[in-house]
Amino acid sequence: MAVNIGTAPERWLRGVERLVASMANLLPRNATRARRGRRIPAHWVMQRGPARATAPVDALGGFPGSLRSRNALERTTVAVTSRYLVVGEGTNDGFALRMSDLLSADMVRPSLWSNPGLVVSFQDGAVTSTFALNFRGLARGLSGRYRAEEVLRVLQEQGVQRLGLHRLSGGPSLALPWEEVRVHENETLLWAGRARACVGGWYGAVQRSCRVWLTRTSLLWCCSDGEGVNRLSFSDIAGARDGVSDRIRVSFHQGDQQYDLLFDFDVPAPGLVGKEQRTR
Image (cartoon, rainbow, N blue to C red; front, top):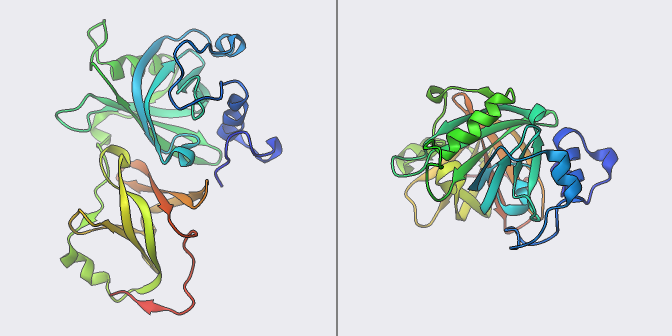
């Protein structure tokens, strides 16, 4: 269960969630982007230590508290110290991860026309979660290195494992043409409805209002301006987490990489329908 920062008793929190809840008392309560001139509390600056790498980014995917912001923190910042990876410092939705909770990180270029990004996996209580940092603005810093490379170098110096570029991809491939979906048309339909869901982009950055179907073996969804349908087999789902309102985050593996997709339902989270039906 995802814990809304600052609302759950401390005794319910474990691991990363405990850290995030503690951070809520340190970070100023303001909009997602820090207000100009707003000072970060001095005791937090001393605790995290001096920043060794900083950059403007978008955070995408399953970062701590991602359900509150629909899996996206846009136009924010990342800072890496010898103790923490901090994203959105000085904002309502910001979070900090101890270096000891970071499992791995590596660079990946989402497309030939975009800046290299960074994929980070971390220990999230008893499970592993993954998010991506999309670096905004100039691709390279004053050193001439890619900004993602500078952040990765500092993480490696603190002992964070690098996966290896050959093991990473820019995003999952779940789309099927309607002709291939027909092989699933006789599956028992458990629920059907609508939700705002990830339909494309790096780490599900593009979200649209979709039709959603839940069968005994599959989760399927599609939007009106796309072709075909997205299908995720239950056998590939690593876990699901509910959170704010009617939102859930579904984690799954494709190859060696984990992805976290958002489903924001317009109606209560899906359950079994009263009478079993067949997909059409």
